[in-house]
Length: 542
Image (cartoon, rainbow, N blue to C red; front, side, top):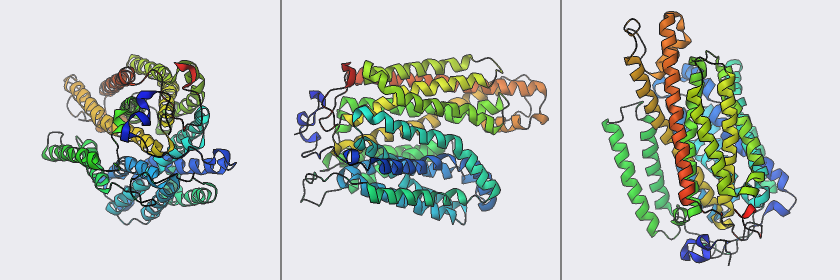
């Protein structure tokens, strides 16, 4: 029976929490075919990563062609919702049926959605097909990360994770530019069609070169070869996540937070959450098993990465507005200020093993998130109006700090479970990060609007008439500042600087919450499962 190096997290000590007959943690790592599989994983990750950024710069062309300006935000929200609510489901299915069929299913769904998006005839159809893409994107994100952990032993996992982080970094930089070029010089539909050859190559590589270990026995408790799937639990998770994310995404935008739609959505999500708990407790093979939250290692990382999702809203959503409205940069230069974070992050992640080998995983993560909190606190201290290199330097340092924080925690969780639980564990931490990002967008959006409204209400009487009323309107007014007096322009820029500064203070608070989660819940020494291809406990013994 497989065991871990720490009794409190051992499957053998948790009764029914652990797998009855965990499959050996073997795969392509010893077959000599790992290179093509890694290439396929990077292509699969590129599909999901590019799709998050490439469409942004093409929105004007899409709206001009299809109409639907009032609902175009659902091009992003619908995709995000589908990815988020399917992550735990795909994680469990990959543990039940294997990684290969789930990854292939995800790629096929994503490509079908891409082809359908290219053929969309109005905004409603495009949004529906974006949701179909998201159903495939959820399988891509979770399963790629799980297979990467299957292929590499613990000491080598930073290599593959750095490569995957590099894919995200490249996509963050190249995606908006590529989307703009395709929309301007070809047609916005090519944004979706370019996914087809990339996905086809990934499918061929996975089908030809990826071979999973033979499962030792069926884990479902049913007849061999007929695993049980908790479909009622999956539907309950879909409903709960869909209602909650819709409330968070649309609240304060499409309707007021205390309006009837918001209250009904939050109440519905609470009822669905209660139903999900009841269903999962009775299920033989629950989609979200209880051990995900009973094991200190996983629950601590889930909460910490949920706080990371919260934190990331500040730079990704509000920094471009700061760069354009306060510093007066163009869209490309503003994107560069943000993109430097995505350059330092994978480099730091690749080098993080040298840190956690000496300090231990928890201490390495605490070092990274502690530094990130201090860096975020420095942002409101930037001089006004300042120079572009100042926030760029802060973002460079923030990326380096978060590289030390996120990757060791993911590796720690993946190494604390066996092959038969790794998909579920990986999906749970990615799910919590996505939910944290949705909560952060709603929370910090409210903070920003409140701060800006207060600043506009306190504006001098000579400039108060005609001032815009929200952050988007202020940004638009500053882009066309010829209609404003110099005094009004300066006041609005200072107001935006104060607003974004408050958001960064909120992000620093999220970093503090991550520190508390790790200090109070995470074990000082992360357990390592016997299936993790290494006999020793966590490097450094800290």
